[in-house]
Amino acid sequence: MHEEGALRTNGERFGKYSRYKNDVEYHEWLKQMRLVYMPECDPEIKGARPYPKADMLTEFGPYFFTSTIAWMQALAIGFKPEAIGLWGIEGKDDWGSQRPGILHFTQVARDRGITVTVPSNCRLLDTPLHYGERENA
Image 1 (cartoon, rainbow, N blue to C red):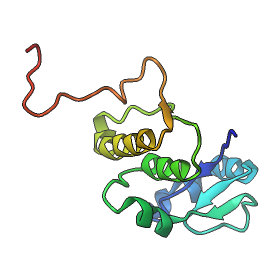
Image 2: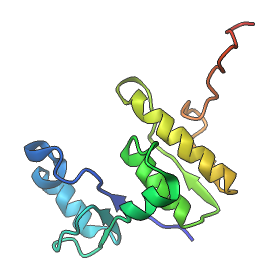
Image 3: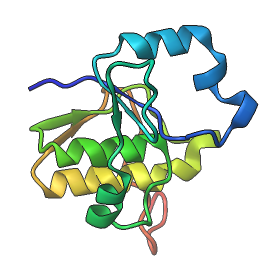
Image 4: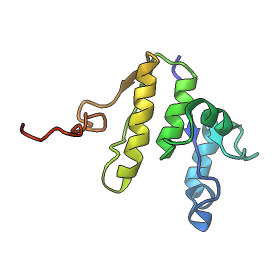
């Protein structure tokens, strides 16, 4: 089964800069989504569902939720799909701190028999140099 939805995890953390509250187009887009997981459901968004944060933390532990993507991966893994696709994600530069969580949940998915797919030109899942190895060795 192919499931599409949206996930808004940051609550009001960004205050007046929150895209959720200040971007009218984004808010209207969320209203059109069939399914939106949110920290607190907004009655204006018919597809809003509470994100099962406590369940995710119980199942996966607290250490690797480094980004919205990691929260999304954990939720997807819980649905036990055959495959999870990661598109538009590089996890580098300013977002490099998110990469360990993304890679962790990618490995969890694979350990559970779930195929994880990225575009062919994406470097997100490149294997890092292991400790003790040298480049060009």
